[in-house]
Length: 150
Image 1 (cartoon, rainbow, N blue to C red):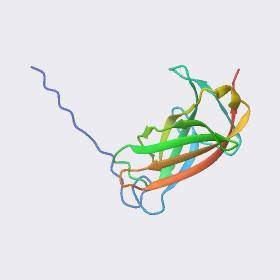
Image 2 (image 1 turned 90 degrees about the vertical axis):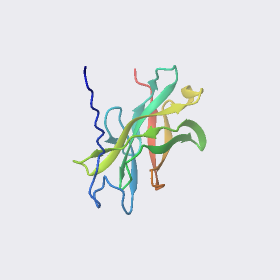
Image 3 (image 1 turned 135 degrees about the horizontal axis):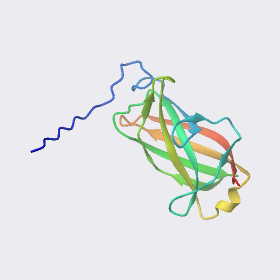
């Protein structure tokens, strides 16, 4: 007979750590499929043809002082000239990056509407909103330039 023992480990951070809930939380929009990378304004971000036949850009977020005991509720939107062209509402598993002193989430697919061709070579305002398990809400905005890579 084989006995399988599963032990759950919870990531615990000392009070005052940017990877623990605390005062003055922050949120910063970035990009990245497998990690967070900062995104200066007007960074060219390529459209990606998704697994279900749609188009998206791959975003990421970086935060401080949010509770990571449960996934965050997030919403990302993209607007061009005030018109909503992309939207997604993912759950985000925040992961502590000790080297940067932040919590990060990546591979967040900001999905475009059916008129995705109209966003190529355009500036898009991206808005991110995150709510943690304690109900703390943080937001950020960024400006990206959407391109279609060859």
